[in-house]
Image (cartoon, rainbow, N blue to C red):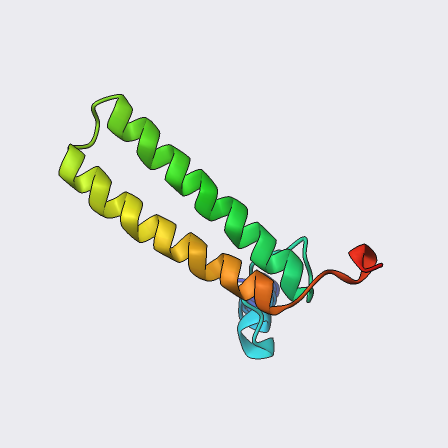
Length: 100
């Protein structure tokens, strides 16, 4: 094998390794978040996602994809999680722009 080709392959492998390992070494989760570091925005996003899960479970039940017992158990669990998220949002207090 030509030494130049071998050198190019090694360089390419090193570049790929750096691109793949850099987020891991920096501690990035790899997830993009439109909320950034705003805890209220993150909780609001979690709340909306939980509401979607509740609606999806209800749709699955109504369309016959899920048994009633399974639906009831899942619905109880999802609603309990949503309540915990709402409590976390309440614990933050009112957003700064809504205070009078």
